[in-house]
Length: 266
Ligand code: IPD
Image (cartoon, rainbow, N blue to C red; front, side, top):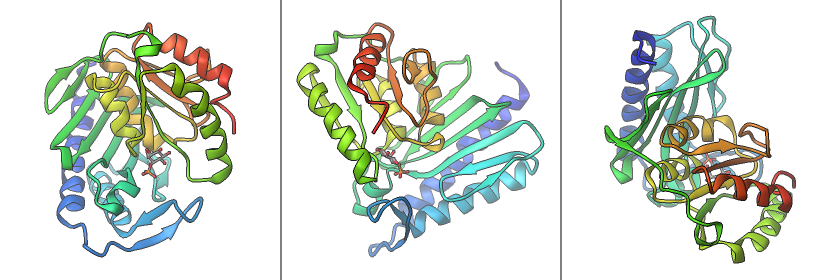
């Protein structure tokens, strides 16, 4: 799908992700404040999350005033152009707060509800991942593909945990069953980076319950364009209920297992 609109959306997403990433990397205060909490006392919103979302929404508003916006820190407008931007100014906020490097700016553009462009920039890795629907996935401009599917027992699988205690109880129960059946588990702290790592072949698979569109919209397109399948329960698209990404051949047994283990409910 190379058309002038998609090219414009990709260029804008790459440019504003770079600007937000620079702001976050260069402007991280030594005594980073916690501006508010959201779902629980450990779900923090940093001052920098809010500043980065403002930078992104101001930029997009200047260039494409009729587009809709959905941002983790509150941006929510419908727009009239059929395009909506889905923005996570910092995915991996807790890593950012602690000075760990795994955090990213995630920006997706949807056209009539379908993600057509995804950009994830991870400044501390010096890497930017992007995909356009139907045009493959790229890291720093170079094409990437996900790894061929290993057997489930040999799979390196990333996951994440929600911020609310009741959800974590369910997630721990699933992990207790899954861990002995796979090569190993990773908890990196950024769903967007986990999805891009599946795209680059650095992970075999990723799953999580409870993530939001801004966490996965860009990364899921990048994973799919790199050859992965994404979804939720069998027959259901990826959503907050459950998101899974893995190459064909691993996706199906992992999806069945996660469904049987009840990874889709608390
Ligand atoms: C979080 C990260 C984390 C995942 C959480 C998300 P945030 O996003 O993606 O890896 O496990 O479920 O909420 O809050 O850092 O934008």
